[in-house]
Image 1 (spheres, rainbow, N blue to C red):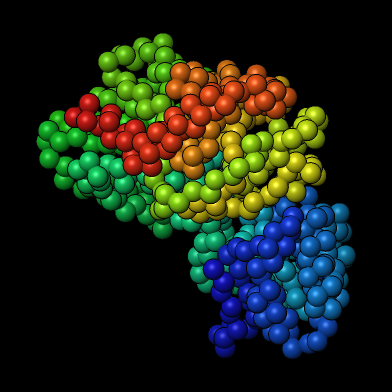
Image 2: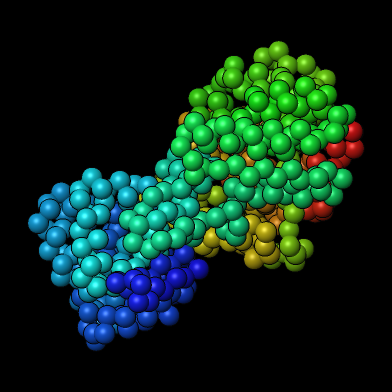
Length: 503
C-alpha cells in the first residue's frame, strides 16, 4: 500500500509506504519504484536525504541499508538523525533544514510519536512541510504524517496481540493502516478461522458497530445502546458463542444473555492474567465461570480452571487450534536438520543467544517481524513475513515451539505460559506438514508424545542429538501422524468435533 500526495490542496509532497522489503538482511529490494518517485519529487539530481530511524531501537543496520540505496544507487547526499542527535535541538533543526527528502523508517509508531513530541521534532517537521520538502516513510514512517494510523506498537513492545490507533502529525487527513486485520497479521488468524468454522456449523455472525468518536460518557452510553440492540435480537433458547479475550462490555453482554435465557459458549484464546502475571485472576475466573460451556486449549488449562472451582463438566479441550489454508500445496523441505521458527522475533529473546549453541548440522528459517538485535549466525536464514492464509512456501523440515529468554528451558513469563497454552504456531507447523519440536515441560509435550507428532526436548542444545537418534521407522510414523493431523486442522475438524458434542 502506497499513497503519493502531490496535489494542489497539499502544500507539501508525501510518499507514505505501507510496507515492502528494502534489501535489509538479504531480503528482496521491493521499494525501488517508490525510491525513484521520492527522488523525482525533489526536482534535483543529487538531493539531500535525511533518514530518521527513531522508531527502531537499534537503527544502525537500517542506516547502512538506506545509505546503500540513496547514496550508493541514487547518488544522494545522505544524513541520519540519531538518538544522540535529538537531545541537541540545534543539531536536529540543522539536519531537517538541510534536507530535501525526510524519510522516516518503520518500527514502533507510538514510541516514534512520543519522541517527536518530547523533543519538539513534530514542530520542526511541520516547518519542513511548509518549506515544501519531500516527506516520506514506510509503515510507522508513513503513519507519522497522517491524522491517525493503525499500529502494531503494543505487539512490538509488549507482545500484546492487539492493534492500537496512534495520532500522527495530521499533515495528511486520513487514517493510514499499513498494519490491519488482514494479510501478514498472524495474531488475527486464529479468531478468523474460528469464525469461519462456526459459520460452517450453522452459527451466524453478530456484528456490533461501536464508536470512539464521542466524548467518553456519550461514547459509553452509545456503545451500550448498540450492544443492547444487537444482543436483544437473539431469540430466547438460542446459543451464543464468544471468543475470548472479548473486551466489549463482557459483563453487560453476559447479563443480557442470561436475562433472555440464551445458552453461552466461550473459546479461550488467551488468559491475560496467566500470560502476563503468572496466575489466574479472580476477574477472569468469574467471567469464565459465567459461561455454560468453556473450550480451552490443553488439559493443563482445564486443570487450572477446575483447580479454581470451575465445574469440570463445563470444560472441553481443543488440544490444537484449527488452521484453515488457502491451498493444500505445501513445500516439502528435504533437509532433515532444517527448522522453522515463526512468530514475533523481537519477543523471542532466546534467539539472541543462539550463537552459543554448538550446532553442526542445524539451520533455522526465521519468519516474522525482523529484529535488528538478532545475533548474526550462519545458522539463521531470515525468510521475511508471510500471509498466514498462504503457508505453501514456508521452509524447514521441523517446526519449533519455544518461548522465553533461555536456551536450556522456556524461562520467564512467556515460558511459564507455555505450561498451560497451546501455541498457535504449532498448528501453523502441522498445517504445513512439519513435525513439532516442543519443550518437554510445555502443555503440548504430552499431546505430541502421545500422538507421535515430533520430539520433546529439555534444552535447545538437545535438538541435534534427539534428531540423530530417531530411527527410520520412528520418522515414518511421525510423518504419517503429522499428515493425519494436518488434514484435521486444515479442515476445521478440531473445533467442529467439539461443537457436535456440546450442541
